[in-house]
Structures are given as C-alpha cells and as structure tokens.
Length: 198
Image (cartoon, rainbow, N blue to C red):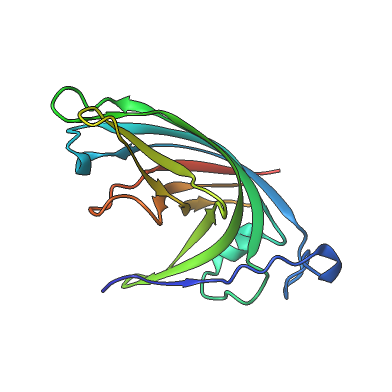
C-alpha cells in the first residue's frame, strides 16, 4: 500500500489573534537543530559520487511541538504551523571521478522556511513528520557540472522531512530526507537530525 500523506494547511496567525494557543493551550516554542547526511548522484553517470550535507536550523511553532507529533491523527487539537530559518552546506562527499562526464559543485543555502506537521499513514499506522520548506528557494541545491559541454545541472530538493524516532520534552532525534525535487530515480538528500528545545 502506498503511503497516504495528510498535510496541514499552513496558516500563520499573529499572536494577537491567538497563534500562541491552540485548542489545548500552550505557548510558542523555539527549537534549534542540526542535520548531517549525504545525497547520492548515481542517476547522472557519477558512480559512487555523493554530496555531503550539513545544516543548522531554527523552528518556531505556536504551541507544543512534541504534543503535535505524539498524536499525529489528532491534527486539529492545536495549531500545526510555524516559521524558521535554515543554513546549510552541500559539499563534495565523493567526487564523480574520471568515469563520468560530471563533477560535483559545492553550494551554500541560507533561507527562511515555513514549518508544518504531516501524518503519513501506512500499514503500520500513522507516522508523524515535521516538514519545512523554503518558499522562495531550495534547501538542498543539487549542483553538477558537465565537463564535456561546460553546462551546469541543478535539481533541487525544496522540502526537508524530519522523521522522529526518539521524542522527549526537550529533544527530538531521528532521520530526515529531502523531497519535492531530486532525480527521476529518487536521488534525494537524507541523513540524521537532532532538535533541541530552547
């Protein structure tokens, strides 16, 4: 069965209109995070080539983040949207080498993001995700240079999906993956993350 995703529509409300309190109450929270990982490029005749991924980010939500991801089906209990900032570096993990016509180009990202909570439903039940994206750009710019023609290729992952595996009141850890772009065969950035409540 293919996963079915239910996304909360992002509605950013001012504090004066009650954004600090969902139906269950609560105050705005700020979480800071780090992530590391890789992005394989096998689709582009770049055997074993990959980018290295590292980033820091800040997410601000209007109520309890841990409460939101602990009850992924109870999506209307509190406001499920927020804002943040993402700063990342995509470096050369393993260069393509002489076997292919491409070389990997390092890049840097510094952008504001919008946050929402998703629930992916599969055979084992609902699985929560913390998603954020850059409205005016990309989180993981996937840059390759074609040595034979001199042209550059860019295929971006606009979204970052955080998949929590361990949740406490002050820290969330798990795996992450890029989405919304990538190549036809699904070469997306992925790795591990840590979020800490401030």
